[in-house]
Length: 295
Image 1 (tube, rainbow, N blue to C red):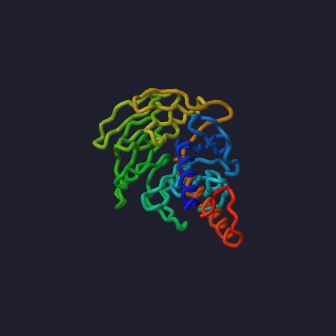
Image 2 (cartoon, rainbow, N blue to C red):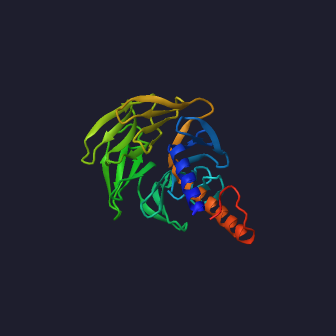
Image 3 (spheres, rainbow, N blue to C red):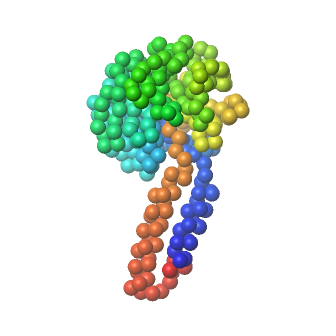
């Protein structure tokens, strides 16, 4: 059928043309910025009061914490905004588990909050002092950066809390690579530390002014949000550091959510399929092919 062939060819062409990731950044200035794979900046939203943590659910939605209002907002990639959760106290970092539950560093309450896809909130773990960044490993263990104590805490799926790493200056940012290594931002010296699953620690790269947020793209490059120097640094798998984006247009970057650009394709394909279906119905009523979209 020519309709199906047209859709497949069009979607494949877009996938090839737009195979890079997009980056959604919260900033000190109160914006949510979108960056393309070349570091070009556009403003995605200015509607969240003091945005902090940001996470992508893999289904076309972004979630953003509002530190001032104690809320989590949900955004579609088209920019539609709704309130997902309320009643939090100084929410910071966000992370999703493999079941689609959202975890929030409930900073001012010294706890981690779990929110189901239906929006039901509960305390996942209390007694976590000054939690900031969050990240899950492949086994479902949650890792939380403890800013004040300079720790990285590990919480098992059963809720057992332990210290995974200590002695990290102003630990804010955490991220895992595909091999299960944990990366943590340190502020003395300004660097990104790499911690193997067995706890072995090395300096992965030196940064300019310290990472407030860390995130990997789909090619294994690590991005470090440098608030004090108003830039994002890109660190290749080989450890080469370069400036990805900077300046007043970007703002002072806090947290990052990486969205694979092909995430738009199911939405696009669905729209094209709907148009083709309507066209087929029209053709059944008036059989005159237009633009080769007839069956």
